[in-house]
Image (tube, rainbow, N blue to C red; front, side, top):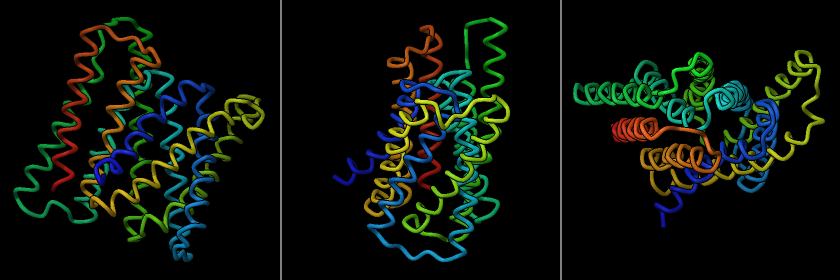
Amino acid sequence: MNILIGLLPAIGWGFLPIFTGVFGGKPINQLFGTSVGGFIVALLIYLYSQPQIDLRIIILCLISGMLWSFGQITQYMAFKEIGVSTSMPISTGLQLIGNSLIGVAVFGEWKTAITITLGFFALFLIIIGIILTTFTEKNVGATKKNMTKGILYLVVGNFGYMGYSFFPRWGQIDGWSAIFPQTVGMVLMTFVFVGISMVKEQTNPLKERSSYTNLITGLLFGLAVFFYLISIKLNGIANGFTLSQMCVVISTTLGIFILKESKTKEEMIFTFSGLFVVIIGGLIISVL
C-alpha cells in the first residue's frame, strides 16, 4: 500500500503536462491554471493540517514559489517548441543534476570517496541520457532551431526549479508548512507574467478560456504534492522522491501516444533508452 501511495505523485505529475497539452492555450494560460489550481489545494491542506508558519517561512517559501513559476513557464514554453515527450526527460535530468550539485556544494552531501564517485557517475549517466533523448532524424532547419530554443528554455528554467527546492531546504522547512506560502509565491509571480503578457501581446490571459480549463492541471499538481508529502512520511525521503520521479516515464509515454507527438522508430528507441539511463542515474542519486 505504501508503494501505491508513493506512486500517486508520479501519476499526478506525469499526467499534468498531458492535461496542459489537451486543454491547450499559451504558456501563460497554462501557468495561470497550474498555479491557481495548486493554490486552491494548498489552501485546503493548510486549513486541514494547521502547520506552524512564521515570517521566516513565509519569506523563504514566497521566494521558492516565485522561482517555481519562472521554471514552470519556461517548461511550458519548451513544450511548445519540442513537445512533452522530449522536454520532460531533459527537464527531469537537469533538475537531478542541479539539485545534486547544490546538495554537494551547499549541504555537504556525498562526503565519502564512494558516494562522491557514485554521485558523479550518476550525473554522467544523466547527461548521457539527456543527450540520447534529444536525438532527431529530422534534418530540418526549423526542427533544429526548435530543439535549440526548447533546450535553452529548460536550462534557464532549471535555475527556477533549483531555487524552488533550495530555499525550503536551506531554511529546514517542513513540507506541510511550506506548501501554502509556496503557492502564494507561485500565484504572485504568475500575475507578474500575466502583466508582462498583457503589455507584450496586448491580450488579457485572464479573459481567455484556457486559463480556467487549465485549473484542472493545477488541482492535479496540488494533489500530487499532497500525496508526495504523505509518501515521504510512509516511505522516507529517498524512496518517496525516487517513486515520484517515475512521472517522467508516464509523461514521456503519454506525450507520444496521447498528444500524438511524432517520432520515428529510431527516435523512440533513443528517447526511451535515454529515459532509462536518466532514471538509473536518479535511482543511484536517491540512495546516496
